[in-house]
Length: 354
Ligand SMILES: *Cc1c(COP(=O)(O)O)cnc(C)c1O
Image (tube, rainbow, N blue to C red; front, side, top):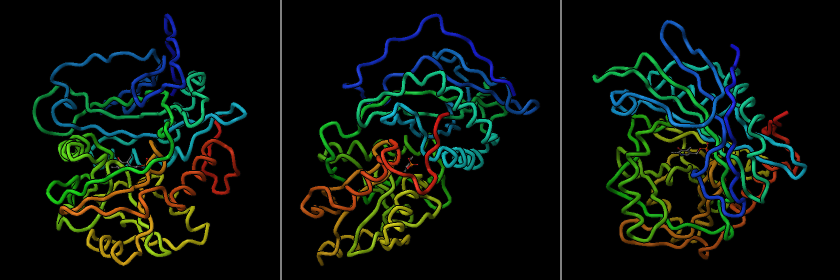
């Protein structure tokens, strides 16, 4: 398929790199492609970023048949631009698509389209330390139809947003609040898909956490409200004694690319990593025995997010001394060094733009 290009009449001014926030500015162009049952995916095109016309009856607006991905393009010291494990994101997009009854994409073609868009927009990849260009691919259901069934038509798009360093004031731990009432995902549900409704479902408890003075929610399993699943929209790790423990993928946990990278890095350092069920009671018991050394989240946006405080069932515990532990710091540095091309990449994770 040939990707067509429509030129913008004029290009935008670029934001000041020292004050970039997350997800508020978008670049000049986007990639779009449509699906119809008879034609398959068709009309791939790069056109100026802008509003998309849709009828109020468009299915995605009512039934939430929407999925997305999130990855970043990083600028190295030499000025080169690189992606981090982009094929993993496209594989996951197709897994989400299957779960949401959406048609699969040709991963090689989509990667090619993403690279073509990035080549046009490479001037938008910021160069200040810790900044990057966030890449947001998404698929939405586009039938104008009121009634519950899978849509027959879809739109796939990729938009780009220059984002600032996640920790402009330094790498600081967050405070997390464990809810034993609300859940993010349930057994047999859509927790392992990156689908819109999961995030809508997480808002209420997150607001409660904010009111209590906490940054993020730690989610327990939706069946027994006992086992830890994720924190915010990140995967979670616990350093207990000398062992790194993370909840095993059980269908309601999102399989993070950063999660997998942390596991593989830890193993390459000779650290024991265990993926298993881990209860919140076990976390508190490990803390009481002085064995809970570190807790941190992992995800594309922040890479690593150290946890300083946890509150559950009326009792707050402080992890370590509330500061950043040595493992969190090492994972953060190593991931960033690979992503920004400051160190060798023995895993083959980095894909240069050209
Ligand atoms: C995207 C996401 C993650 C992190 O995945 P990465 O591939 O590491 O960015 C974790 N949990 C949830 C719920 C997510 O949506």
